Each structure stands twice: as C-alpha cells, then as structure tokens.
Length: 128
Image (tube, rainbow, N blue to C red; front, side, top):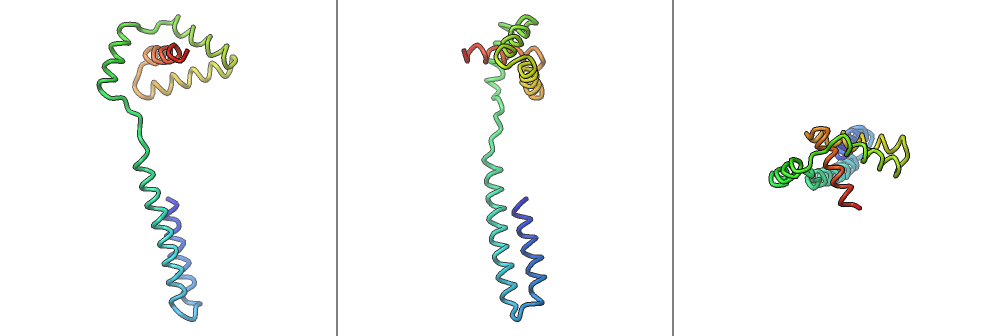
C-alpha cells in the first residue's frame, strides 16, 4: 500500500514540476526516483506478505487432538478450575476477560466452547 502511494506521489509531483522546469530531465529524474522507491516498497511488501505463515493445524494433529478430546472431555469443573486459576494469577477482571478472549479465539478457529476449554486446560497443565 505504501509503495503504491509513493508511486502515485512521484507521478503527480513529476507532472506538477515538469512544466515549471527549464529542462524535462529534472522532472523525469524525480519520476524515476519515486518509481524506484515505490517499486522497492511494493516488492518489500509483497515479500513480507508471502513470508507470513498462518499456523493452521494439520489433519494428523486435528485427528490426534480429537482423539485426546474424546479421552478426556472438558466439564464445567474444568472451566471453573481454569477460571479460578486465571483470577488468582491476573485478578478478577483481567483473569475473566483473558480466559474469555482465549476461548473466543479458539472458537473462531472452529472449536466448540468445551473443546476450547479442554485445549486451554491441557496447555496450562503442560506449562506447569
């Protein structure tokens, strides 16, 4: 986005400066510099966009997680234990909001509420 803006600014500036310059070359140099800078920004942005990796679970990971979920499903007691753990660690308001946001994030990935609670509980157990 920034690279395109630099390209546009360069084109507009060169067309504004070209008529007032005694020689055409000055305006063309400005256009050339902005085009080079704009292309550099565009190529950097494209390269940066390609390197961003989305952390998607693989099919094998999803299956093994599903098998683990069947072996030990989350219960309301699990949620209450997690909630009390977060409240003790972060305080009442922040702990509740933090747990809800972590559950919501996992639910946006397609998990149910209880699956999200179970996975967060498993992560807490392995972190301890």
